[in-house]
Every structure is written in structure tokens, then in C-alpha cells.
Amino acid sequence: MQRQSKRERMARLIDEAEQSDLSLAEFARRRGIPPQTLYWWRSRVRRDETALVPVTIVPVHKSSIRIEVGDATVIVERGFDTELLADIVRALGSC
Image 1 (cartoon, rainbow, N blue to C red):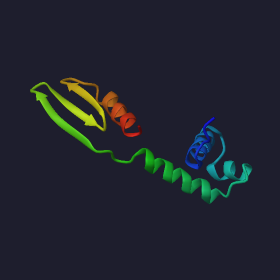
Image 2: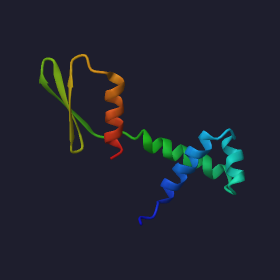
Image 3: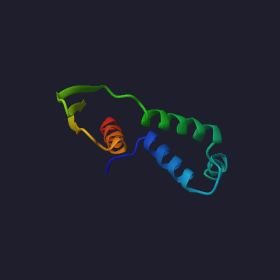
Image 4: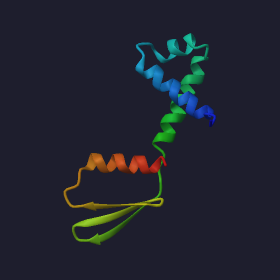
């Protein structure tokens, strides 16, 4: 069984806090965690989730482009769903 990292544990706690009806400070107090600690971890987790990843964009032909993120390649055709593409790039960036 693999042990969770502190970051993973804190990210899970932050998710639980945000799903609760409590303020982040009250949630932390009830868990015996200094509220400042949970606030700090929330900012760190959010920053990590929005970290930039190197992306290469290569024209394939006039109606599409190829986007390379790490080892993954995505071909984007004209008329693509921008929200779906943003979700894909975010997911690839977190791998």
C-alpha cells in the first residue's frame, strides 16, 4: 500500500472543507489544525493546480494544429470546443 504524501492529505482535507458548510477556519479548528496552516496549504494546492506546463503548438494544415504537452499529442481541428481543450491541457499538465 502506497503512503499518501502530505500534499495529497492536505489537498483531500481542503476538498472536504470546501464541501462542508463550515468556514475554512472553523473546519481547521474542528480538525485540530491551525487555520493558518490550512489557508497556506490551500494556496499552495491551488498554485500547483494552475502551474504552467511547456506546450508546443505545431500547424498541421490550415484547419488544424498539433499541441504537444510532455509525451502527449492532441490534434485540434477547426471548430473545437475550447472548454474541452482547456480541460485536456490541464489534465495533461497534472500528469
